[in-house]
Image 1 (cartoon, rainbow, N blue to C red):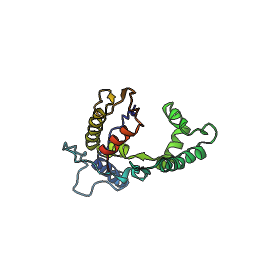
Image 2: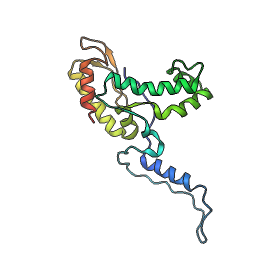
Image 3: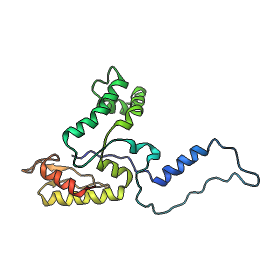
Image 4: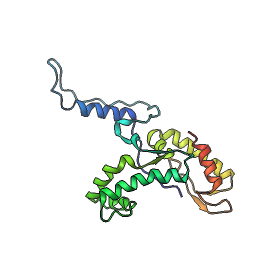
Length: 188
């Protein structure tokens, strides 16, 4: 089953506006003749958000769709080594970081903050974070391809996340046909 993430994408405009606001927050008050008016919120259709380095997220290594197992392992090893080094005792198995974070552990938050930029993300994860509309379209394409290939799938959620109801002759999510459908739907 594909892991579900509830993180909502952040509009590039919001990130840029926040960065500008934070950088200007140390400036003096209004100039003479100006009033201290509160900011005005506007509603507009957001264009697909392009990756934004203002949040520091895009510094994370990107695992290409066609990456080999060795490439994926090498990218993950850098993050795992960071977690082990920063966490010390109790972090010998770096994936425990997520357990500690879910428990609200302060040390885990510090380790995560330090190592976050080294944690690789897949093309799909980055697209979901930066352009949820395109992500949903690609998920629909993946589902259509997988159904045509004979996979029995769960009903997708609002973002198109889905699972397999039973493992048939084609195999599961890591099977060659499913991977071919994923790569076709999410081709860069």
